[in-house]
Length: 181
Image 1 (cartoon, rainbow, N blue to C red):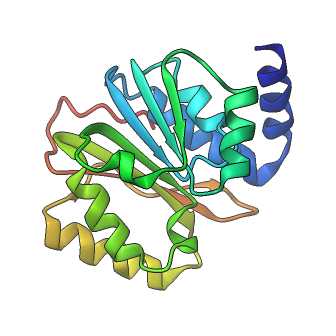
Image 2: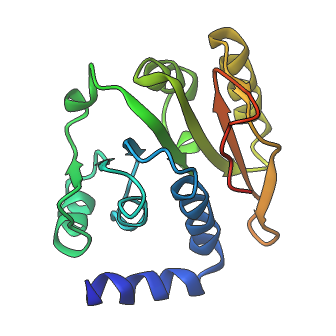
């Protein structure tokens, strides 16, 4: 645990990673308390942050070395790190985090469609990306309209230097929607 905290301190000092850390802090504050998928978890520090607020965290990344690092440095009883995308099929999550993932996948619209099917009806998807990526914004808007997702928050910049935008989408928007901005 001490090693994990040392890594988190380093992350807080990096402007770009700190912007991502803010997204994880917001998702953790949503108080859903059940299960979350951290899709593209990388080295696992975001999953570690989420594990304080959710009963079960699944950290997925296709990179075996990153998953190995995550298991060594950010392991907790309520976190399952995996590189096997097949294990995600048929599971339902309250929250799915896609922080700086969509710009790096081959077909972001297809990934959003697949992950939308893994989301519980009342669940929501947190997305962050660089604001300069207007093509990605078009894909996200198209996906949300086609699949019945609504923006549950306004976009906001997490970092002026990196121009990262965070958005939260869900199928329902009501006064009880917990959004941590």
